[in-house]
Image (cartoon, rainbow, N blue to C red; front, side, top):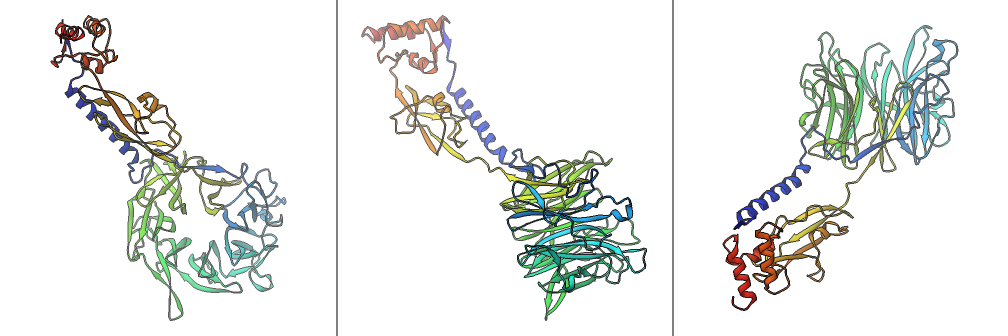
Length: 564
């Protein structure tokens, strides 16, 4: 009766190759990232710090508007518009600018408890905050009764707080910094001056053009009046950004008379012979380079480039482009990816921990099912940036405070503020494996989380007439089985070497001699009563013919009585 060898050399080679391929693929696949797709790992988490929503007043049915947040004097400040207490007249109710501050554990009033409005029966919205020369500044739009008695002219209002109270930025406490009808002001500090840009008309008409002014700490002066891309264009939501120590400006602009046509221009502030001019750096059609409708543009400098994100209304896709100093080009595919049936909107950009973050929301074509999206860009790929934001996010403002990033938005009734907590990738150590002098192994290393356990201890294949006796990291003093290595808690890079011992041909029980007990083991194996290890079978194949039979038993017995 004969038994076939259960593991030929060819079989061992195939097994080793397959194991190597599996481990190689396992080590490569998790690191691959496809542009526009999120990675599997979550490195960031969003946490609410608003206690269920900020509300400065006591209304049981509050209404809030777009907030602005900024870090000042070791606190996080938030400003927004909120419905005034009801005075039995909707005409007198209106909205007021409210401000609160966060000390790391709780929010408290930062506007004297009465709001910042300048006029008693005014309606104030769209605040923007900035820190300039050690003081906190706020700009917003505020409508008040005109001399005509029945109309409201929305002016740009500005106040500052240098530590005691909110006061006007202009002498005699006149709060207005710009004439004409205004909307959507935005503040930015650049070149030791405070800049404000908004949409409106310097002649108090209904036209919507870009207005820019700056403040030197004493007076406001005009930087640009009535800027627009096309002769009769209608601008919307100007935004400022700093790139390579230059001031840039973007907005969306609709072309009247042309259906579904709006563009995204980008301008750079330049000074020639002491005269300030604004230079178009976006071509004749803007960075959209299309005749489809576009809007909600935002600029952000990152890693030596100027990035822009905006909404292309057909097919409701967010576009991303970067400026190389002379030309604009798409980032990756040029899109922030979404499901085909979804519509993307409300984009924003910010930089945190050397990564560019994009935040927006997607909703299905029916306008329902809105879900937030946050991704970060590391210079090559976009990846998901954590979970925890509610799906109603329309992030209007961000700030960096105490090494954390914060987002703020209105859910319609209250102000929501969330912090972005980075969860650093666990520190990893390298566990290396060496085959030793008398065998081969199926792999050579693996990465293990600090304090974790090896999960891929290699398979050891001893050379002919040797058997594996354990792994050692101390030169062979201590030898561990593969199971013992897998149970170790690894706290530093370590190398394990495989150790072997030569075995005596015919010695199956490992007692160092060939005896009748070895022949008995082989006899039981041939009859199917027991199983033997590959090392034992290798020792019992006396004539190396790949078979175990009576000839092998006779050879063992001959050696045991000194006749072999």
